[in-house]
Length: 108
Image (tube, rainbow, N blue to C red; front, top):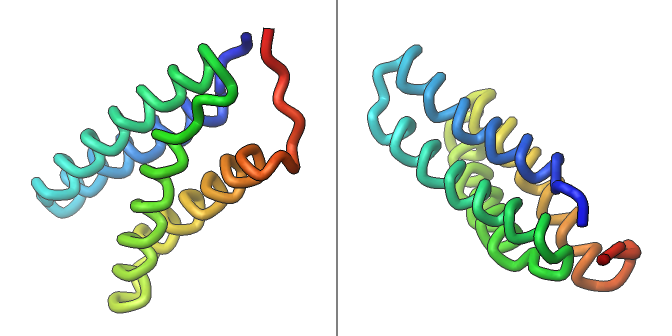
């Protein structure tokens, strides 16, 4: 069993984005959402690290973020929602490929 370093990095990026939104714009909702989703994604990365077939929490959370931030990017055209939507979509593809059996999963 190896650590899901990509998953932990993604979780840290989401949390850091929420903190950055608060620091730059004083947005408390950005801070709260970033820390909440970052924490959930961190738990998902931990679960995936324990069992590579246990990716559902990360997949679901990434899909929600991709949808919500994609919608915000579409309506505002701002960079940060587009960045979060993009990396979230990449994570959906990563976990989705695992779920479809397109990527071999090593488990001890």
